[in-house]
Length: 427
Image (cartoon, helix red, strand yellow):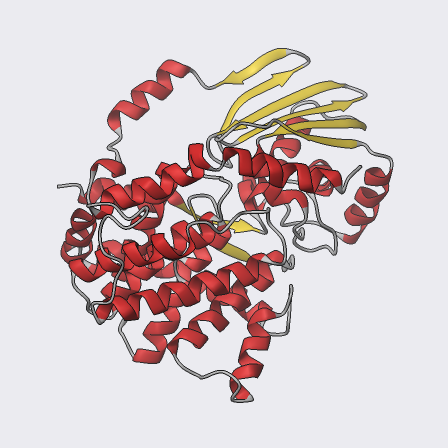
């Protein structure tokens, strides 16, 4: 009944991004604001929501040894191409980096955070000797809703148009887990094999992490396995492959990730453990493609309830839960066992905080991968947290809604404390 709409949703939520999506979105906004005005740069002023601010605060910018929101904004002006969207900084050259570092020292870019927001906001003003350009991004990382030149509106997304579009969309949160499972069981391989592009893109990124990019976690797991200090099973292999990819992404390697819900780390965690298990267990591409689709659907479902950016680590909680369900499917578990693994994951790692995009995201990704695959394996043995235990509710859909509530409104004050801790370092 919903096949075409679900396929369309999956395709819309997938996309390639170079580097962490939040600084990429900041670079996109700055790039577009500069493009509409031109001239010699004088100042960049940016206001963001807490999630965007956190995730760009201390993560690497691809093609550079630099990190942070300010350098992303400056590079967006100096070297960006808005047509590339989240690969906006694909064409950075060394001279751009040198100039951007100098402009950063001159404090040409100011990035402020607006506390209390739960939706994506990037409000960017670029001032040059030719005037002022302003771009506003909302809800999604590439969704430009306003463009102004010297105070005059050049483009504005009309609210009534948005309402009409929303009327045509179906709500994923009105469906149930069984609907997702029925979809992947019934959809043809031809219709769903586009999900395998995520494996290709994220594996290419993982190859960049094999030499110890970022914090070198994936490489270290591989070394520990060779030293027989940890086992060489499907859990450690899934952790290693996931660690490689997140290490490379957070370390600023110039290879894109395949995102889901606008996040590369979500996309990596929702796919790479499944690719690892399929490889180790000799599972074919068709079942893998369907397992990824199921992983994506659960991830999107939770993200719609918790918000795209939140105080908890959505990569671990949402994508981790999604990939755990996908793993149960991949290993031929039943719907009841998929419900079990959601219960297990919700009771296990829901409280993991997000303190922004940084090298430590690799450790959270590896922790989430361990929890997800172990939870799936336990569920296949019918080991699970029973209903009505803590935040585990009477139905799996209610449990996922509870996960969302933990993020918002539950952890809004936690988010403020995290922000204050990060901002204190800039004083």
